[in-house]
Length: 176
Image 1 (cartoon, rainbow, N blue to C red):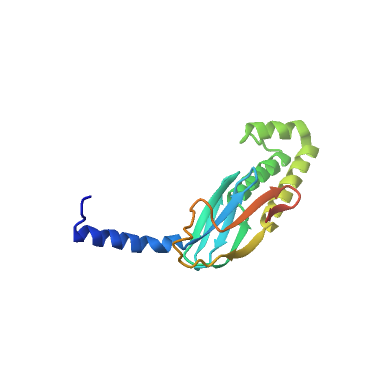
Image 2 (cartoon, rainbow, N blue to C red):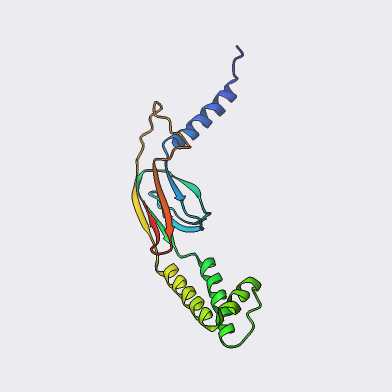
């Protein structure tokens, strides 16, 4: 077996010591169990705050340098609200006698339903906008404060805490 020179030993020791704190990190998985995108604000025990879009049926993992309380909140999706506002504008344009031709399929639906259908569509859009702005879900918990124990090596694919969000049309976002 070949001996390592002293310089190489120092570098390896430095890398090992540098990586040991990573074994003691606590993890948090946030899962979007819905078929629509989710915007979350994650408050981690180490003081970091992150806002992130999570695609439908996806998960994201955050690692905290230490254990303690965390919270995850579903936020209104501003992109979705902007799209709904655009549809609302097109519907109002149609109701005022204009051509809603900006979105061909949508304008055909408006023309088929006439004024009554357009009013119903406008009301539905306004309800969705209000629900999106009002609906929020907040979950919190504790990430375990891990002591550095080389016998208890952390599995990076298995975080310590998890939150799952689901969306339904009646109640908006909920989490567990």
